Image 1 (tube, rainbow, N blue to C red):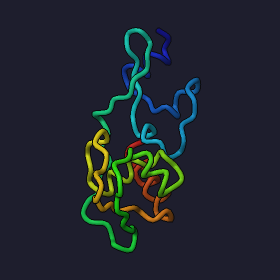
Image 2 (image 1 turned 180 degrees about the horizontal axis):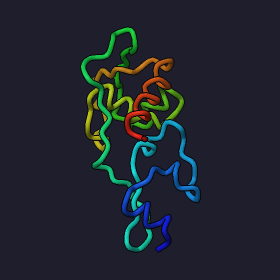
Image 3 (image 1 turned 90 degrees about the vertical axis):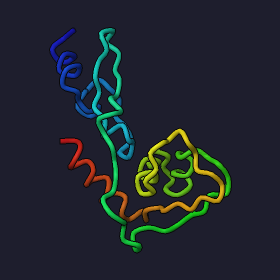
Image 4 (image 1 turned 30 degrees about the vertical axis):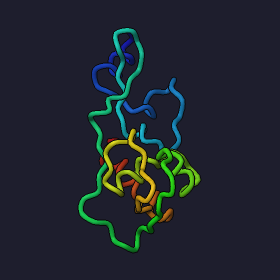
Amino acid sequence: MTTSQQSVSTLGLFQKDIPFLPTLDEYAFENFLRLYLTKDNQFYYNLLTTQVAFDGELDASTFYYINVTKSIPWTTVSYNEYRNMNLWWLIMAVNKIKNPMEYPKPGTQLKILYPQYVRYVVDQITDKVVK
């Protein structure tokens, strides 16, 4: 294992800090996760180290509501609202939903952050998580 691989393995680096890995979409949740190496030099994300949550209630002027009409993946909800499937995690955080494997049920009302606030929120999370 090389020195750069050792630092990835023991310290955990963000994907943006590992030059030979592809660049992620700016809104991908993986941007907030540290990467590590297995003994077989395979990368993995440590999903247990990062949680995105909002403290308190959001100001009502920062979001709108949608009603789910059928059970669809979070990535589809994200694409329908933001034209970007990578903001699924933001929709879940705004709605205090923890399990991405459980799709929203028909009849569920979801809060959707207005697009003009998305960049600000992502930047705030990045400043706190990706140091």
